[in-house]
Image (spheres, rainbow, N blue to C red):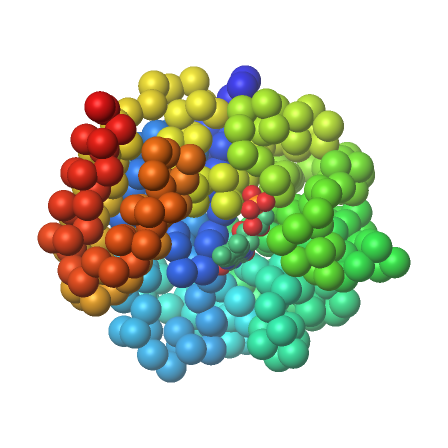
Length: 316
Ligand SMILES: Cc1cc2nc3c(=O)[nH]c(=O)nc-3n(C[C@H](O)[C@H](O)[C@H](O)COP(=O)(O)O)c2cc1C
């Protein structure tokens, strides 16, 4: 894929292949692997702005970042412009360069609250949120969907309004809210929005390999692509997308396990890494049988031993 840097306000990314925010997954140890294999920008999982304001300490592990992460981004969801401005300006987020605002989440508990993709139906409020967050002096981006359903596509109009309110970048997930995470990605909708604004537009949805990423770029004319589930199965997808060399999968898993154990509790590490390893071994010999054993692993050591066993069995 032909990659290139992207200018977001006053900062420049190394390339235009980004890791999406994924609730429950894009913690620092996972992002570190994606960065190592070439991701140009990564996002931690979305954070509830209200929850953050009242308990910033509770989000400490979530906010952890390392020197690999040259551009520090966070994603907030919420619906109260003033409250979100206070979060953006908070001491805890003083290290952050870029605040992304979630206007795409389709989950009922978020939408019912008027947050996430509910904002697609409230463009004035969405504008107020962007301009309030801009007062922090940080870069502000918006991640949104093409509409609530096919009868209510908003992409171009919404993109223009977000740019008008001061957004420095847009990420467009080319699906409607009622598609949730399945079905075709609408390239044309993203393309229309891209043509309508001057700020960088990142296209998102359905990328699982280099050909898919190139197609998404070509058909939308977007400035970059954002990968979500494709990276969850395989963080080394970024090597394919940016022309780097892949590395040892086993070493990657063991490093992620070690980093996760350093940052999180033994319980979280076990539960989280059991899940991640089952993603990573998809398609490998006997993966279904190993999956069962992984889910029975009681601690980090048992996961480590199983990883050793899985990879030595592949070599036979
Ligand atoms: C498990 C899961 C968690 C997600 N969490 C977030 C999130 O925190 N913030 C967000 O903007 N999008 C979130 N998304 C949406 C993804 O960032 C992305 O827009 C979507 O999965 C489409 O990209 P893909 O087809 O490459 O997976 C999530 C998606 C999944 C499957």
